[in-house]
Amino acid sequence: MLNSQQELAIRLSAFVGVLLMMAAAETIAPRRAWLLPRGRRWGLHLSLLVWNTLLARLLIPVSAVGAALIAESQSLGLLNRLNWPDWSEILVAMLLLDLTIYGQHVLFHHVPFLWQLHLVHHADLDFDVTTGLRFHILEILLSALIKLVAVVLLGAPALAVVGFEVILNAGSMFSHGNIQLPDWLDRKLRWCLVTSEMHRVHHSVLREETNSNFGFNLPWWDYLFRTYRAQPRDGHLAMTIGLAEYRDARQVARFGSILRLPWQSPRAVLPVSDQSE
Image: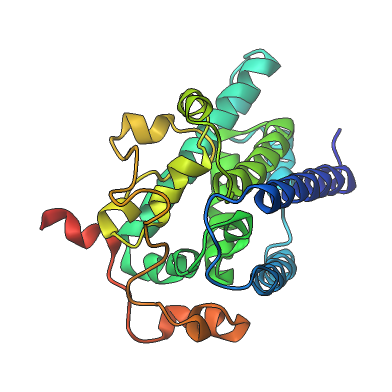
Protein backbone atom coordinates (compact mmCIF):
# COMPACT_ATOMS: atom_id res chain seq x y z
CA MET A 1 0.00 0.00 0.00
CA LEU A 2 1.23 3.48 -0.89
CA ASN A 3 2.39 5.58 2.06
CA SER A 4 2.83 9.34 2.38
CA GLN A 5 6.62 9.21 1.93
CA GLN A 6 6.31 7.26 -1.31
CA GLU A 7 3.62 9.62 -2.57
CA LEU A 8 5.78 12.66 -1.79
CA ALA A 9 8.83 11.11 -3.47
CA ILE A 10 6.88 10.30 -6.63
CA ARG A 11 5.26 13.71 -6.88
CA LEU A 12 8.45 15.65 -6.08
CA SER A 13 10.55 13.67 -8.57
CA ALA A 14 8.00 14.18 -11.33
CA PHE A 15 7.64 17.87 -10.53
CA VAL A 16 11.37 18.61 -10.55
CA GLY A 17 11.94 16.54 -13.67
CA VAL A 18 9.20 18.22 -15.71
CA LEU A 19 10.12 21.70 -14.43
CA LEU A 20 13.76 21.27 -15.46
CA MET A 21 12.86 19.86 -18.87
CA MET A 22 10.45 22.69 -19.58
CA ALA A 23 12.95 25.29 -18.35
CA ALA A 24 15.58 23.85 -20.69
CA ALA A 25 13.18 23.87 -23.64
CA GLU A 26 12.19 27.47 -22.93
CA THR A 27 15.84 28.49 -22.77
CA ILE A 28 16.78 26.80 -26.03
CA ALA A 29 13.78 27.88 -28.10
CA PRO A 30 11.32 30.24 -26.38
CA ARG A 31 8.03 30.91 -28.16
CA ARG A 32 7.77 34.54 -26.97
CA ALA A 33 10.16 37.08 -25.51
CA TRP A 34 9.75 37.76 -21.78
CA LEU A 35 8.57 41.22 -20.64
CA LEU A 36 10.03 40.80 -17.15
CA PRO A 37 13.44 39.36 -16.24
CA ARG A 38 13.17 35.59 -16.23
CA GLY A 39 15.18 35.07 -13.05
CA ARG A 40 13.02 37.52 -11.14
CA ARG A 41 9.86 35.70 -12.18
CA TRP A 42 11.31 32.32 -11.26
CA GLY A 43 12.26 33.54 -7.80
CA LEU A 44 8.84 35.05 -7.28
CA HIS A 45 6.82 32.08 -8.46
CA LEU A 46 8.95 29.45 -6.72
CA SER A 47 8.68 31.45 -3.48
CA LEU A 48 4.93 31.54 -3.95
CA LEU A 49 4.91 27.77 -4.52
CA VAL A 50 6.84 27.10 -1.31
CA TRP A 51 4.57 29.46 0.66
CA ASN A 52 1.43 27.82 -0.72
CA THR A 53 2.69 24.28 -0.17
CA LEU A 54 3.69 24.87 3.45
CA LEU A 55 0.45 26.64 4.35
CA ALA A 56 -1.70 24.06 2.57
CA ARG A 57 0.06 21.21 4.42
CA LEU A 58 -0.43 23.03 7.71
CA LEU A 59 -4.09 23.98 7.24
CA ILE A 60 -5.25 20.84 5.39
CA PRO A 61 -3.21 17.97 6.84
CA VAL A 62 -5.13 15.28 4.92
CA SER A 63 -3.85 14.82 1.37
CA ALA A 64 -5.97 13.64 -1.55
CA VAL A 65 -4.24 10.25 -1.35
CA GLY A 66 -4.95 10.10 2.38
CA ALA A 67 -8.61 10.84 1.68
CA ALA A 68 -8.65 8.03 -0.90
CA LEU A 69 -7.23 5.56 1.63
CA ILE A 70 -9.77 6.62 4.25
CA ALA A 71 -12.62 6.30 1.75
CA GLU A 72 -11.40 2.84 0.78
CA SER A 73 -11.17 1.67 4.40
CA GLN A 74 -14.72 2.91 5.08
CA SER A 75 -16.15 1.81 1.71
CA LEU A 76 -17.09 5.39 0.92
CA GLY A 77 -17.77 6.68 -2.57
CA LEU A 78 -19.15 5.31 -5.81
CA LEU A 79 -16.23 3.21 -6.99
CA ASN A 80 -15.75 1.55 -3.59
CA ARG A 81 -19.27 0.17 -3.93
CA LEU A 82 -18.74 -1.24 -7.41
CA ASN A 83 -17.00 -4.49 -8.16
CA TRP A 84 -15.14 -3.27 -11.22
CA PRO A 85 -11.65 -4.35 -12.32
CA ASP A 86 -8.92 -2.22 -10.77
CA TRP A 87 -7.78 -0.83 -14.13
CA SER A 88 -11.28 0.41 -14.98
CA GLU A 89 -11.74 2.08 -11.59
CA ILE A 90 -8.39 3.85 -11.98
CA LEU A 91 -9.25 5.02 -15.49
CA VAL A 92 -12.75 6.25 -14.56
CA ALA A 93 -11.46 7.99 -11.44
CA MET A 94 -8.73 9.84 -13.33
CA LEU A 95 -11.16 10.94 -16.05
CA LEU A 96 -13.74 12.19 -13.55
CA LEU A 97 -11.12 13.96 -11.47
CA ASP A 98 -9.94 15.75 -14.60
CA LEU A 99 -13.53 16.74 -15.36
CA THR A 100 -13.80 18.03 -11.79
CA ILE A 101 -10.77 20.27 -12.26
CA TYR A 102 -12.21 21.56 -15.53
CA GLY A 103 -15.52 22.35 -13.80
CA GLN A 104 -13.72 24.03 -10.93
CA HIS A 105 -11.76 26.19 -13.37
CA VAL A 106 -14.95 27.29 -15.12
CA LEU A 107 -16.52 28.06 -11.75
CA PHE A 108 -13.58 30.27 -10.77
CA HIS A 109 -14.25 32.34 -13.90
CA HIS A 110 -17.98 32.77 -13.18
CA VAL A 111 -18.23 33.49 -9.44
CA PRO A 112 -16.98 37.00 -8.54
CA PHE A 113 -15.23 36.09 -5.26
CA LEU A 114 -13.55 33.06 -6.83
CA TRP A 115 -12.45 35.12 -9.82
CA GLN A 116 -10.82 37.69 -7.53
CA LEU A 117 -8.65 34.86 -6.21
CA HIS A 118 -8.02 33.25 -9.59
CA LEU A 119 -7.01 36.53 -11.24
CA VAL A 120 -3.67 36.22 -9.42
CA HIS A 121 -2.89 33.45 -11.88
CA HIS A 122 -4.05 35.49 -14.88
CA ALA A 123 -2.33 38.73 -13.86
CA ASP A 124 1.06 37.37 -14.90
CA LEU A 125 2.42 39.60 -17.67
CA ASP A 126 4.33 36.69 -19.19
CA PHE A 127 3.42 33.08 -19.92
CA ASP A 128 5.88 30.32 -19.14
CA VAL A 129 6.27 27.15 -17.09
CA THR A 130 6.27 29.08 -13.80
CA THR A 131 2.88 30.62 -14.58
CA GLY A 132 1.56 27.14 -13.82
CA LEU A 133 2.83 27.59 -10.24
CA ARG A 134 1.34 31.05 -9.69
CA PHE A 135 -1.81 30.83 -7.55
CA HIS A 136 -3.17 32.62 -4.50
CA ILE A 137 -3.07 30.57 -1.30
CA LEU A 138 -6.85 30.84 -0.86
CA GLU A 139 -7.40 29.34 -4.30
CA ILE A 140 -4.97 26.55 -3.43
CA LEU A 141 -6.90 25.80 -0.23
CA LEU A 142 -10.29 25.84 -1.95
CA SER A 143 -8.97 23.65 -4.75
CA ALA A 144 -7.59 21.17 -2.22
CA LEU A 145 -10.95 20.97 -0.45
CA ILE A 146 -12.81 20.48 -3.74
CA LYS A 147 -10.39 17.71 -4.65
CA LEU A 148 -10.82 16.00 -1.27
CA VAL A 149 -14.60 16.01 -1.64
CA ALA A 150 -14.36 14.68 -5.20
CA VAL A 151 -11.98 11.87 -4.17
CA VAL A 152 -14.27 10.72 -1.35
CA LEU A 153 -17.49 10.95 -3.39
CA LEU A 154 -15.91 9.02 -6.24
CA GLY A 155 -14.18 6.54 -3.97
CA ALA A 156 -11.14 7.07 -6.18
CA PRO A 157 -8.36 4.48 -5.71
CA ALA A 158 -5.19 5.85 -4.11
CA LEU A 159 -3.15 4.84 -7.15
CA ALA A 160 -5.48 6.82 -9.40
CA VAL A 161 -5.16 9.87 -7.16
CA VAL A 162 -1.35 9.72 -7.19
CA GLY A 163 -1.33 9.32 -10.95
CA PHE A 164 -3.77 12.15 -11.39
CA GLU A 165 -1.81 14.49 -9.11
CA VAL A 166 1.40 13.79 -11.03
CA ILE A 167 -0.30 14.27 -14.41
CA LEU A 168 -2.11 17.42 -13.24
CA ASN A 169 1.11 19.08 -12.08
CA ALA A 170 3.03 17.98 -15.16
CA GLY A 171 0.18 19.01 -17.44
CA SER A 172 -0.05 22.43 -15.82
CA MET A 173 3.65 23.08 -16.38
CA PHE A 174 3.58 21.73 -19.95
CA SER A 175 0.45 23.67 -20.94
CA HIS A 176 1.98 26.89 -19.59
CA GLY A 177 5.32 26.34 -21.28
CA ASN A 178 6.88 29.12 -23.35
CA ILE A 179 7.67 26.62 -26.05
CA GLN A 180 6.81 26.16 -29.70
CA LEU A 181 5.86 22.81 -31.11
CA PRO A 182 5.75 22.14 -34.85
CA ASP A 183 2.27 22.95 -36.14
CA TRP A 184 1.62 19.38 -37.28
CA LEU A 185 2.55 18.01 -33.85
CA ASP A 186 0.48 20.60 -32.00
CA ARG A 187 -2.58 19.74 -34.10
CA LYS A 188 -2.19 16.03 -33.38
CA LEU A 189 -1.54 16.47 -29.66
CA ARG A 190 -4.67 18.60 -29.26
CA TRP A 191 -6.78 15.51 -29.80
CA CYS A 192 -5.70 14.12 -26.44
CA LEU A 193 -3.58 16.73 -24.63
CA VAL A 194 -3.76 20.42 -23.82
CA THR A 195 -0.74 22.06 -25.45
CA SER A 196 0.83 25.38 -24.59
CA GLU A 197 -0.42 26.83 -27.88
CA MET A 198 -3.94 25.89 -26.85
CA HIS A 199 -3.77 27.09 -23.25
CA ARG A 200 -1.92 30.32 -24.06
CA VAL A 201 -5.18 31.56 -25.60
CA HIS A 202 -6.75 31.30 -22.15
CA HIS A 203 -4.24 33.85 -20.83
CA SER A 204 -5.07 36.48 -23.43
CA VAL A 205 -5.97 39.96 -22.23
CA LEU A 206 -9.13 39.70 -24.38
CA ARG A 207 -11.89 38.49 -22.09
CA GLU A 208 -13.65 36.36 -24.68
CA GLU A 209 -10.37 34.46 -25.07
CA THR A 210 -9.76 34.31 -21.33
CA ASN A 211 -13.11 32.55 -21.10
CA SER A 212 -11.97 29.62 -23.26
CA ASN A 213 -9.65 26.61 -23.17
CA PHE A 214 -10.08 25.81 -19.48
CA GLY A 215 -8.48 22.37 -19.56
CA PHE A 216 -5.07 21.65 -18.03
CA ASN A 217 -4.63 18.03 -19.15
CA LEU A 218 -7.42 16.74 -21.38
CA PRO A 219 -8.88 19.00 -24.10
CA TRP A 220 -12.04 16.91 -24.47
CA TRP A 221 -14.10 18.89 -21.96
CA ASP A 222 -13.48 22.13 -23.89
CA TYR A 223 -14.63 20.41 -27.07
CA LEU A 224 -17.65 18.86 -25.36
CA PHE A 225 -18.83 22.00 -23.58
CA ARG A 226 -17.95 24.33 -26.46
CA THR A 227 -15.34 26.37 -24.60
CA TYR A 228 -12.62 25.60 -27.13
CA ARG A 229 -10.93 28.36 -29.12
CA ALA A 230 -8.29 27.28 -31.62
CA GLN A 231 -6.16 30.45 -31.90
CA PRO A 232 -5.91 33.94 -30.38
CA ARG A 233 -7.30 36.77 -32.50
CA ASP A 234 -3.96 38.61 -32.68
CA GLY A 235 -1.76 35.55 -33.06
CA HIS A 236 0.55 34.02 -30.47
CA LEU A 237 3.40 36.49 -30.92
CA ALA A 238 1.32 39.68 -30.99
CA MET A 239 -1.28 38.76 -28.36
CA THR A 240 -1.14 40.49 -24.98
CA ILE A 241 -0.86 38.24 -21.94
CA GLY A 242 -2.52 39.10 -18.61
CA LEU A 243 -5.39 41.31 -17.53
CA ALA A 244 -6.23 44.76 -18.85
CA GLU A 245 -6.74 46.09 -15.31
CA TYR A 246 -3.30 45.00 -14.06
CA ARG A 247 -0.39 46.10 -16.22
CA ASP A 248 1.97 47.49 -13.55
CA ALA A 249 4.78 45.06 -12.73
CA ARG A 250 5.02 46.54 -9.23
CA GLN A 251 1.49 45.32 -8.60
CA VAL A 252 1.64 41.88 -10.22
CA ALA A 253 5.29 40.84 -9.86
CA ARG A 254 6.01 41.30 -6.15
CA PHE A 255 5.30 38.69 -3.50
CA GLY A 256 3.36 40.88 -1.09
CA SER A 257 1.44 42.57 -3.88
CA ILE A 258 0.36 39.22 -5.30
CA LEU A 259 -1.07 38.14 -1.94
CA ARG A 260 -3.03 41.42 -1.69
CA LEU A 261 -4.07 41.49 -5.34
CA PRO A 262 -7.62 40.08 -4.89
CA TRP A 263 -8.50 43.03 -2.64
CA GLN A 264 -6.72 45.81 -4.50
CA SER A 265 -8.32 48.29 -6.87
CA PRO A 266 -9.21 48.24 -9.65
CA ARG A 267 -11.26 45.06 -9.33
CA ALA A 268 -10.87 42.96 -12.44
CA VAL A 269 -14.10 42.41 -14.32
CA LEU A 270 -15.34 38.83 -14.63
CA PRO A 271 -14.09 37.50 -17.97
CA VAL A 272 -17.58 36.17 -18.76
CA SER A 273 -19.09 39.69 -18.59
CA ASP A 274 -18.35 40.34 -22.26
CA GLN A 275 -20.22 37.31 -23.47
CA SER A 276 -23.50 39.16 -23.75
CA GLU A 277 -22.03 42.17 -25.55
